[in-house]
Length: 239
Length: 173
Image: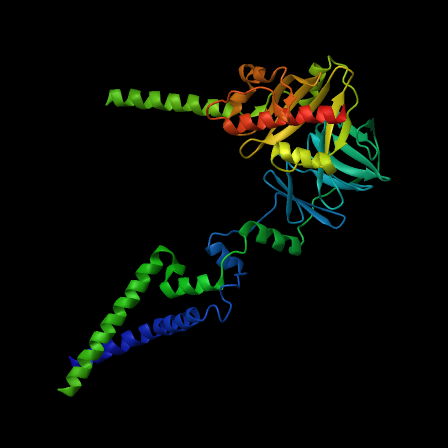
């Protein structure tokens, strides 16, 4: 009986030791979160952020214009990491003319300052051709390709002539620069999850979600058992 | 059992009708181009722009309660009238309004595009007729506009846009 109890005590000890170490380490860290600035540091691991339900941000479309990154998430249009305007329709391309940044959607042109401030939306009512498919530049002049042919204008964008041109530099979607992606991630996620929160969740088992609490109960139960078997063995030795 | 089945079918039918009504409030009711053609009897003048800066920007902020979403506003004017196509957010999404101003009074106001899920009732003439001949009195409309139940924010959007168009007509006139 004594031998069997000692064997059980030893096995439970090995299992529980791992968790005791984890609890002790995380407990000590939690006691000093302010000293170690753990409440001011944020998670950067995508895997852990996904675990917390804060998923990656993927733009529907991205264009690089001059030094700015134009992206669209649903109806929201961003210049770099700043939301600038809404567009129900997808951005199909963009160009820079003079001091204007011009984005094209199927039925309108969206105008911005070089700093990315929204100026206005120009549609069919001010002479912009409809059913736009792409926008580009031909010797510095804006050109749009529509389902009804190709149209060229000047920097005023309010008078368009239909023609056919070769050698137009069409706007093409690009990959989002990592720096802007990081800024947009911060925009969508806020600052995210603190290291303190992760340590606390490891400490109380909640890092494993709904099963975490049960797991912590199991470890707690093992600790009770190991204490009882230890006391029993100690008592037997004294006898 | 048969009775329950009929009740279930009736409930399903009613909910389908209600959901289709809710969806039908969204949409483009009239294109900007069609509104202008109607307002100017087919001879639409060339558009003009007014830049939102300085004192004008401050006044617009006072009227809307926030900055205008754009650096310039486009409008159309002939000797009889000016026409404005303006957007204002109802609850979450912008509503596009077309406003015709003649003699410093509202000659017509219409919802050209509605994108919210609720509040589309403001597009009906029974509501918009209240704005007919309204003018500015100490930066407010000279009359009370009756609200629409469940469309408070859309009503507010139309009211501030009406005030804005009247102010801009006067500013640019």
